Length: 289
Image (tube, rainbow, N blue to C red):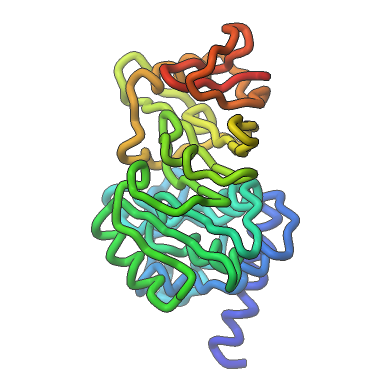
């Protein structure tokens, strides 16, 4: 068996492992993970792999086999910027339910590995807009995705960069509130994956366990209204341009009282009874009904 065939077998096993770890049953998503070579996006090894409690540890060799595990890999480890955990991203992708023909916008695309997986799911009739703020990563993103015709790599602020109306918006960074453009550009029935996080280093917000640093919500457009539901806890790199102090304090208070799993609605500039709100901040709220 030649090297490419061997790696294809390893990727298929890796994809199955990722689906099991994510608790996801989707042949389409599994096939997308099996189809995209992770090493094509992470440069030449050895790679810095984040081992919990030990920090970044170099892979034993340059063999790509070490990338085909449910591991976080540093892309700029000195800044704690990573290619995220595959099972976590698989769970977010499954919640977003990308379909053939969709326009998918990936905010915080990094070096493009997960953007390429999203492109597999969008298919030939769909497209992906991959947006990355960091200039060093944006250069790598454009180079890594250059051969994929249905993917556009954009260097810009994902909270302000213009993009066409989207069926799926996957935000791969922690915000304190949804950007107006994310809600405005979501098509009818469109799905927004929104990680909302607090800053443990901010004055008045005490450190809390990883699972309490934030939560991911699925936001679905329904006419002029938005349904919402809790997807998972999250500890994630902060989203440039979407860290607002007032909303952050409201988030910290909401997380402290609990109940995020009961959220069903996101409102914009609408009156909502205090007892129905999980979170209330200027211009938006998350509510139980």
